[in-house]
Amino acid sequence: MLEQDIDFDTILNRYRADPFDYLAVHTTHTGRIRCKVRKGEMVQGVSGKFNHIPGTLLYELERERNLKRITALTNGRVDLVHADLEGSFVEAGEHVLTIKYPLKKKEIIEHILRQVLTTYKAPEKARYFFAADLQSRIDKQGQQVVAIKPGDEVLTMSLMKRDTPVYYDGEPGIIHSVYFKPGLSVEQGEPLLGICPQERLHLIERIITRVKADWE
Image 1 (cartoon, one colour):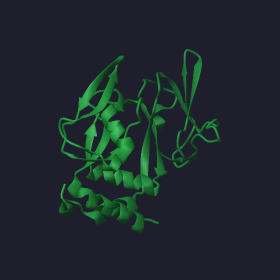
Image 2 (tube, helix red, strand yellow):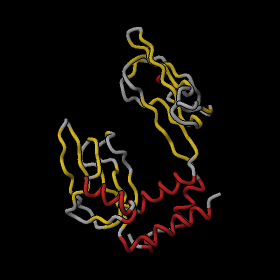
Image 3 (cartoon, helix red, strand yellow):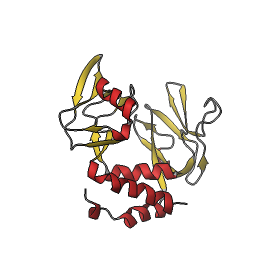
Image 4 (tube, helix red, strand yellow):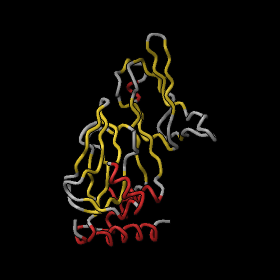
């Protein structure tokens, strides 16, 4: 991606016009559903010093006389509710409602970077770790100094009690962003790394500086 390919004003105006993200809430399993919130209602996520206070009750699922209460995980406003589902029997994975929540400046920067960095995605659903040699280099030099190239062993994929080395096959560059947490499961196709070629580092810094300067 060349500098002339990026329209900074268009990217920034998109977030000025709609500085929000949207969280789709789906049913966790089958059951008869009862919604507990309405469109436009504000909801609160988990809170408390130890995250011991549950968020706003969003909906209930009843199956075989067992009641499952689903609460909000983030603060925001209910943007959409599928009222037609009320009282009906639903399957797991049914879209129930959408929560709209404001993005912080840091989150806006991360969203924009995902548009301009080269994303390296998970080849399979698995747990991922940095390869030992690469982790050692990151610990010594810092993540955003370490360069990788095609053929480098960058990750270890842990799947069904078997560890498999993952060799990088993208364009060479710096590991600018890391999107996974070591040891936690990542879905196939989800981003793992954001890679920035050396010659584009000034462009990335310009984007970050522009957002910080322009965003209130």
